[in-house]
Amino acid sequence: MTKNELIYLLSLEKDENIKELFNAASAVRNSFTGNGIYLRGLSEISNRCRKNCLYCGIRRDNLKTPRFDTDTKEIIAEAKWCYENGYASFTIQSGERTDENFISRTEELLKEIKKIGNGALGITLSCGEQTEETYKRWFDAGAHRYLLRIESSNPEIYAQLHPNDGLHKWDIRYNCLKLLQKTGYQVGTGVMIGFPGQSVENLADDLLFFAREKIDMIGMGPYVLHPDTPLGKKVLDNKENTAAQKEKRLLMALKMIAVCRLLLKDVNIASTTALQALHPQGQLLGLRAGANILMPVVTDVNHRENYSLYENKKSANNCTPTPEDLQKLAENAACSIKFNQWGDSPAFFKRRKNEADNSPSKFRLFKEK
Ligand code: SAH
Ligand code: SF4
Image (cartoon, rainbow, N blue to C red; front, side, top):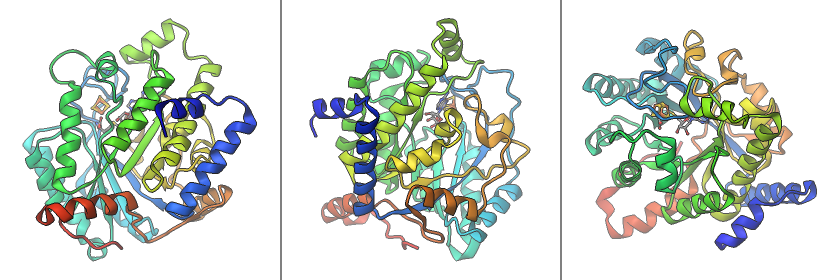
């Protein structure tokens, strides 16, 4: 698809056209990745962060957020719970920390999680920008997927969302995506959708960025305000957080999922928790728009409230859904949960095959469960 075609699809407004777009995206998902939905239990292990992203509720300078680190024992218990409930994959997310203490603790944690069911759980990491050496240590310890959103494919827009302090650089973030691919991870990225100043043209460019960079997994969600952040305050001052504006952000996020599915076809696309913050059935709507991954929050209940990236984060109060709840959710989108299966991105295997033909030693072979 050309950029103009992407813009055309993202600009659809009539209900019947949008429905047709979502149906087409679901059909493409069904023929390229099946109508199976794969689960990744999301454990938010620490909200300590060295960064100060202008939109994020756990940014370093938000002194109202009490900071936590989850006990290793508790995280292992969450991973076991996932294994016992057929989730098959576990995702570890945190604020960005680059101290050796965090790096080695995470490394040991990965090794422990790998012991559960004798390597039964696939592991995804989402712990921000790290050195090549750290990415390699974590890969060797058992992680095989990594999520690092580029936030915007446009460096100028990225600069508007982050402080200009040398620590928040688009080039460094982009280079991290390249390092992750080089290390052998399945690599996920994504953008926030609907923050002030973002245009449909920018979003079309984001989709073309995913295609150009041969991204395996996509995690995108609407921008959701957090009142104790510089961007959140500005949006509130400008009265840009009305119900109509939130609805617009939600709809654009769903259209992005659908158009991304039409463009990239065999990638994994998550129906993210931020959708749920803007609509009680946000995750169901994401599946109906062509997503194939659900990431139920399994974080320690004592810490959920303090992992508040944005307001109205549903996992803060809600219990983790049971396997039956999840199956019902999937069936409502004419899909079915694939329990006990990793559901790795088919796009990754295609990329790996192409690249391995040139440089076989780069890729560790791992078993698909
Ligand atoms: N620290 C890591 C992982 C945790 S943050 C990192 O930044 O990569 C995970 C994602 O939460 C970010 O990539 C960002 O896209 C999203 N996020 C943060 N604040 C948000 C907000 N106010 N609205 C929507 N998404 C937000
Ligand atoms: Fe830290 Fe990630 Fe939030 Fe940025 S988005 S402040 S890196 S947790």
